[in-house]
Length: 120
Image 1 (cartoon, rainbow, N blue to C red):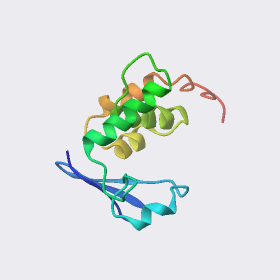
Image 2 (cartoon, rainbow, N blue to C red):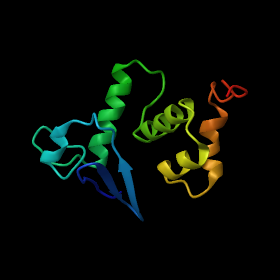
Image 3 (cartoon, rainbow, N blue to C red):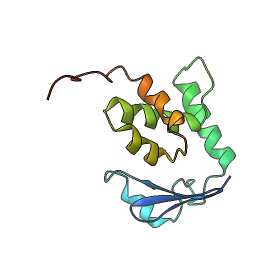
């Protein structure tokens, strides 16, 4: 897995290709103290396994009846944006999907997708 760096307004994910993720303006300014998005108490970058364990522990403490993993945060973001009515193509670009079919699943499950459909 690649590394993720804070660039003062965007997160750069380095895996097999470059991806930019723009953070909301409410993101803590503490991120500016480190080039890494997720750091330990000592300021060192989280390992992939360490972050996965933290997310799994949070799911366990929340008493979920299923295992929780970090990729679920990505899905939660996709569903939240779809539920807010964002355009499918914009959502596709934001999530970095090459195939629109990977994005459509978020829209199909949105309970609000036809809300105000006929209103101007």
